[in-house]
Amino acid sequence: MSHILEYQGYNDQDGPSPRIWGNLPQSEIDSRPGRIIHIFDRFDALGPHASASSSTVTEKNGPWSTFISQGGSITAASASVPGGGITVSADGDDEGVVLTRWLPLFKIAYGGKPFWFEARVKSSTVANTKHGIFVGMINAITPSATVPIAADGTLADQNLVGFHRLEGDGDAIDTVYKANGVTQVTVKADAIALAADTYVKLGMYFDGTTLFFFKDGVLLPDSKVIPSAAGTDFPNDVTLSPVFAVLNATGTDPGSATFQWVRVAQLL
Image (spheres, rainbow, N blue to C red):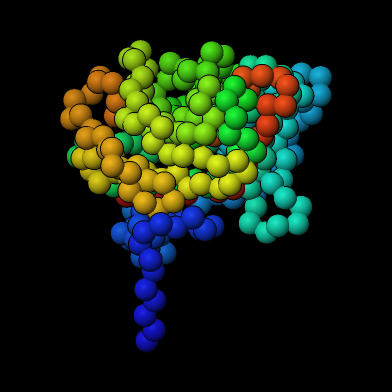
């Protein structure tokens, strides 16, 4: 019998972080799939999208609903480096790309089942007023140029939770959540520092009462105790799906974002 010791702290390499995923019951995934929802996606099932050369594209693409502004694109992250992933970009002010799993399967509710989330992403630039990014979970939507990121760079009036790179603050990510019809809440502004063209892993874990946030497998100091009542400022009464969004603040050298993979799980 062999024993493998996995480092539970800082972990910026490819692959899920042990600190987040160490308590995921792997046996449930392997032998009892009806007891757990589990997604690990390197976007390898995302097919070629319709041409955006003459108009916007809104379509179902594999398990994803996608939106691409005219002149935008979703391309392979690399033709020579293994590991998969996609690079998304658009070429105009207030234009962007959105991907969300079209079937919402997950719910973060007080007293509910544990939930895990992690995604590995990067931006080609950390300059201000280039493009905003949102990575996390959202209710079922038809993605558009203003959902989930509005034209002014704020988040649209949807149910969502995750990580927001403001278009005016390119070198940092805020941890945020919002319920539809209620003012957005920032758990921590500038919670995560970014470097240009450098991957970062954005993680969340919900233990049934509290939602925790992670950078590269390291627990961040600010968390959110989920309210027990519905109708609060946290979207605890709706099912959610993974979402990735980029919206340009400028049409002049706005840069691009790369989404390498996402992993999401929840016990049933």
